[in-house]
Image 1: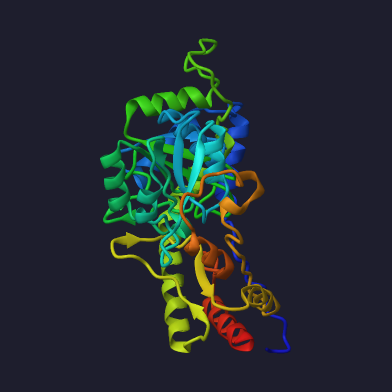
Image 2: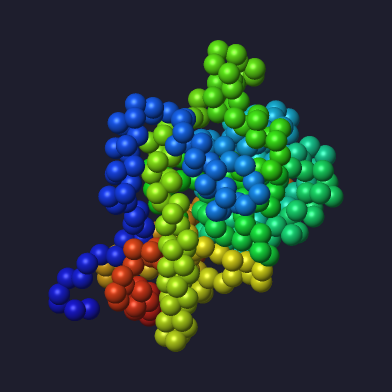
Length: 373
């Protein structure tokens, strides 16, 4: 390593600038702060760009989008919902919040997405829905999952929290199931500061979701159902509208950075590292560039940090191994989940990478892997 200190390359870098600040200032000046015209415009614009042919219901987080989506699809106490164990806990949390039981299934070892064969093996007469997660920005196999759901009368809620703009066989994620749930947390491919969006083509699902997010009412003081307070503010929607205009460009940057990383690491023939792969028919958006480190993964992450490259482990344990979900159903072994949890490591791929950052990331990955081989 050079004696000159290099600037640290963070794993994620939210792209927030003067336009977002001006949009927030305009909302503050308007005096209308919650679920107003900015929210309505964000819903329309997001769906027109990201999930054409669907309608959107903006909420205050991605977890809220999952919760409202499941409720609007009729999931409730006594139901079982098949989810991957290799994901963020919010996927299963939303199932629990409906009073239903998460049934954990294994993932495809190449894409880290829900394995359709594992879904089929987990089905019981109580199964009501399936929640495939488009993990790390890579779409799940919605062809096989959709066919399974249709054959067994199941609802499908796509967890697209990390996959804004990804597509499966030419169809955008969030427009493949009965409904889709997106997140706008600061580290996602676009942000609204915080927030989420439920997308659907079904008028009844949309209306129920709108009721649920707003205390069960469309008309003020006429509460039709027991609802929640999951409203998005106009402040967040204003940020989201600005971010949405940049999403396509950021996605292309992520794809270029991922291709460059793959090319560099392939040329370096780095030992002990397995590079991410895309399935046939998948158009990923590279929320994360996730490696497998066959041995010494945690030491590898520490070595990258010493070399000025941010890295993180998503996720160090399957959700079925977390205390909150220890009583969830695991009808079949989850070997690919456990192996992934022990081996994965994500490195920077975000659109804020500049200059020789991609080459620095590749060189650090190669050097760290060789040191620990």
